[in-house]
Image (cartoon, rainbow, N blue to C red; front, top):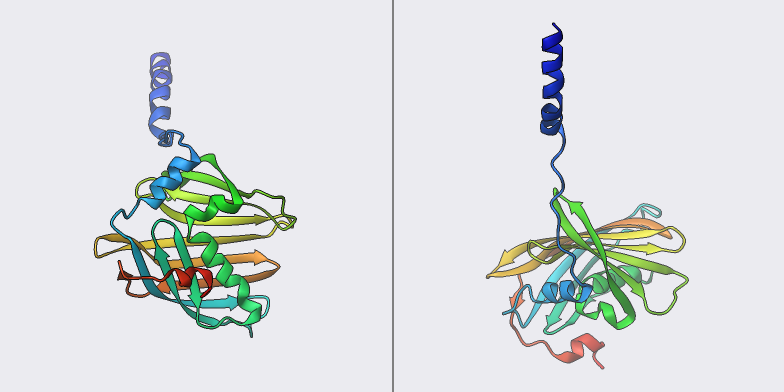
Length: 220
C-alpha cells in the first residue's frame, strides 16, 4: 500500500503537466511603424478600389432612430481612404467618422502617436496590439487600441476609449476577391453618449480603377 502511494506521488507531476494548458504562443516584439508598414503592404498589387457599402444601424437609446446608410468606399495607394455616404442624417454623422478612422492605418500617425502595446490572444492565437493616442490632449478621446493579426496583417478590431468611460468597438472580417484580401463586413458596438450598433456589408470591388483625388478632399 505504501509503495503504491509513493508511486502515485511520483506520477503526479507528469499528470499535472498533461492537464495544464500549453503556454500561449509568443510573438517577437515589433515597432509600431513596422506593423503599420506590414498592414499597408498586405495587397502590394492593389493601387486603388471603389466599393459600395451598406450599413444597418440600431439605436438602443432611441429605437425609432435606426437609419440605413449607403455609400461608397474609396482607396488609392499609398494611403488615401474615405467612405462617402450618399446621405447621412445629422444625428448619425458620427457613424461616418468611425468608418473613416478605422480604414486608413497609414493616416493614424498624422494626428496621433502610434505605439507598440504588446500582444494578446485572439481566437486562440497571438495578435499584436497598437495604441493610437491623440498627439494633442483631448478631453474627449483618451486613446484607441488596434488589434492586428500577424497571420495576414489584417486589422481585426479597433476600440476607442473615451475619458468618460465610453467605448466604441469595430470588428472587421475579410474575404479574398480576385487575389486580394479585402474588407467584407464590419460590426460596431457603440457605448459612447448613446448605445447603438451597426453592421456594414461590402459589395463587389472595382479594383485598380481610376479614383480622382477630389474624392478624398470632399470635391475641393
